[in-house]
Image 1 (spheres, rainbow, N blue to C red):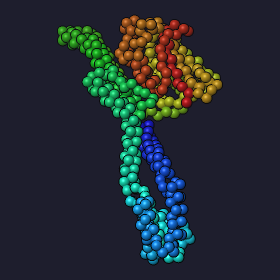
Image 2: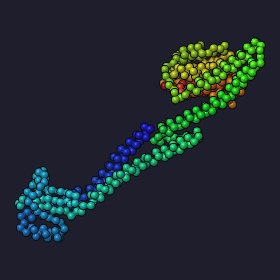
Image 3: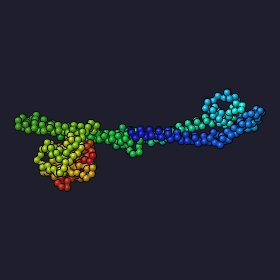
Image 4: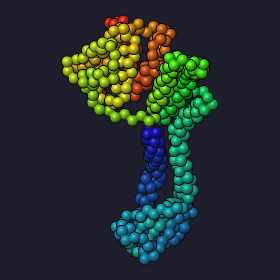
Length: 430
């Protein structure tokens, strides 16, 4: 929105100033060709001075004036100095022998003070200035408005096109085409709005996809324990032996625990909503943070090795979400490892101001096949090779979502060192 406002202000100011200056310059050039600024006017002034000196004490000047007007079409008149009312500064200028040039809407005239007769001689110049100023001013005003309108239309045209594309994409999205996106351009006035729209569309598509996936996963994962519960209840109605009853009651409790775990996992995943996200970043020393996390959160016979740099490794992130992310990675590695899990911390570009921190978690399990790699971060997705392991296939999906919030690069592959899976996170330097 900010580029839109700035370009609008710039367009209006630039158009107003530019058009005003251009028209003013055009008007000045026209005025340079008017009588008051050219040699013709100087000739009239000199001619008037000569006539004034001649007719100041001429006895038959009325006949001369009449003959002059008929011959040359120039009107000459005389009036007493006392009747010629002008400001004092102009009156003093006239007494000093300088002609006065007076211009009205309809005519232009020169006035000379005749000292001998104490009269003022007025000469009306033969210039038709009645219609020219009105027409010229009207034309220049219309030209100014036309220039402003043309520039604003030139500015508004791409904006209107982008808005129409945005409306078309919004309509497509509203009719159910969740893949519709606005093709952004760095030259667009509303690029920030378009990016926000695409971000909103991505969020909507992710929510819809998650809901579809969750609904399918819930129906699939709940079907088995519900079936076992129904069979167990039917058996309980028939069995009367106490030992048999206890065995089936334990099975029912196990199924209930599994269903409760699934529901909790669903609630936990659905709570990871970006709209309610409030990150509280603070410096974390990984050399102290990770060992405490392993001690408090990971309880297993699997050996967890660590490899840290000699110096402190500090990242600026949210400790709660980072702990949640790393706990899921370690839990997944421990679950699939045979005997060993290794955590490696490394500094990338450590000699620069933008040094990044790399966290790599490897295990010595069976690894992940190339066919399964693109799917391991999907909620409730589990490889056919790991159907016998515990869990609901949500750990890496949670890690993938939180990594985006923490601005960390997240990738999954296979370990060349231990032979199992390898999960890598890279925190860029700040």
